[in-house]
Image: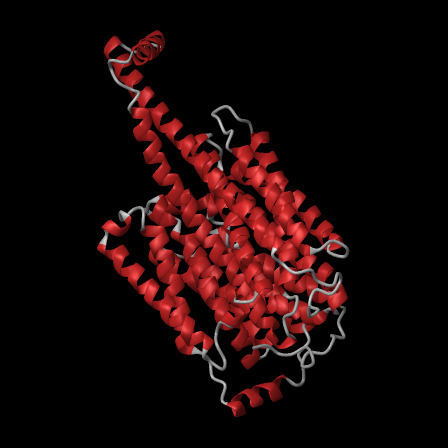
Length: 528
């Protein structure tokens, strides 16, 4: 489901100018997947909700985004790429401003869903415009510029969000999109070409009777939405001990079971599952799922760690990610060059190993680590992730016919967002479950009959007594301090378990990457 390359001639405008415009759109959209990560405590406080409820601000956006991606291919063809792109940018801009004006959690989530629906159409259409604006031999470098936006935006998001929250207000994390969106609409309107044959294409669609796969779209939306609810609410609702989770799981499984045969038998499916079933594109899809999980999970879990356990402000939590962002920008351009003479599968495998090594390094976490410890970990991730994300974009188009580039764009970007949503939920669930586990194990060793406990209690009591507390008050403070240390150690151990989990995801990328076929270097879309 795509406007063919023949339908979109090479533009009269310099294609690199088009690349800058569509990269701006991608940057703005992907930025909003993480800009709220470090300001969730501010949002929770302002709207009087728990941190767990506030996290829905991130995940609802990702799910709405992924759902919209599935419809973007058909709508881009039906309405025309330029027109559809403008509609998406306008919806994204308006809903961003409304997010900043939200008066409670319910309205904020509603506007975030609208924002996700608008953003969901921007990236795949931008990517397919890019694919058609450049000849095959230059797509590697063009995708490198596009990848710069996709990879750097999640890193810039927390830094910008933290600064705005600390110095202006959390609302400006969303309001800032207003003027940028208006400027982007002007650039899209004036610079992006519109093929004269688009009207003919739409008439042809109508004549052939190709209608939007509404049932397929609804099945995908129900499947993804219920899956996200299960992942987000499972731990809090005691998983399958909750009738609500059991019902949502049944709905999720039923939607998935109906979706597979329905989509395989449609003439115009909302998701072309036959593409995912191929070795090349299917492996790229799974790799992007894992890369998205690592990208979004680390971008959320690290700011949470330094704010919760080390007392960082939102600004410093964002700045902690900044060195990785600088390295990522350099790596994106390097990847564009490397794709001229190195097979994507080897770059992806190398990236998986580097990311796994970075996560392994974080498993040595302890209470006295410095800012540079976290900054260096982000630098290593900033080296590894572009080696996955940029080559996998190039490899995913290998062998894809020109009339399916929109579908490929939608699926590969949906994989990144779905993976990101799963990664956030997975890391949050591992963190909460393992914190409870470690605390119960540590408490077993904190017993009044333990000589080490009595010795620690005596020394801490003496400390508080020396600082002016009465004997009785010092004793209570000492017991409270020991309890806090147990909770802190349990928290550290739980974060370490999250990093072990993400390390395994990084390692899993390697065999999947080596499954990919060799492509003709310099021709990302060449058929095998």
